[in-house]
Image (cartoon, rainbow, N blue to C red):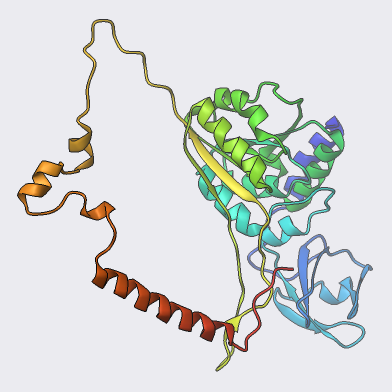
Length: 350
């Protein structure tokens, strides 16, 4: 990334602070415009400028001086709401050249990374800088984000978006080739590249003991390979989840799920760095484990002494049990037929 952009990142963060709690809208403020149909636009106020929408134009001068949360009308007479943007609004409205993480996935990843103010975090693959913003906010104040990418155009774009969002002061954008060393002794590493398993050896070296790792990949083939590589590298508590969100249309007397939902986006994998067991000391006796005692299982002799057939659990069910199963199957078939006759259409995934 160019040195000019690095200097601009530091200066612009001071020039674009977090939105003020009090006071009217002023030139330079970022404002979220919400139209009647729910469409939103993120703009930065500048005297004399005009923003055009499909519901009419809005003069910036009409917004400057109004309190946050004001309602006004476009030049076409349509209602518009002027709100203070959340960090999710800023993240989703970044200028992008790559896909970005959805808020539902970001929240799970931040929880899996277990980061907070003062944390030192590595990001491999900054893309358009949307996740960089989320990570930077999570570790502020006092933290540091080291964001790596091999493509200079992505580094510049991510830096520009983070400058606009006001979080660039805690981020160092760095150019890096795959498998190059990372910033050492960090608390967490987030990976957003197509082949994260390639980076696991250097990630393991960069993490502190008990440091957290997280990555998002879109396909099952990728997540299978990643999980296997994490186990092979010595990571512990390897877990993969998928987050699905379905909106509920809450209306008096006719509340129901929305037909459309945010379905598959990313498969999210997390893990923790754990050191291997030390080798046994010379001359130490080998410890044997009584598997029956460890699992709490009872021997066949014990079961027989209690009058219980030890093989009963593996045999065919008795006649009464089989009859119960048949009745249950008939009931399930009837309920299935009723379900199919429902008049509500099924939810669909866009």
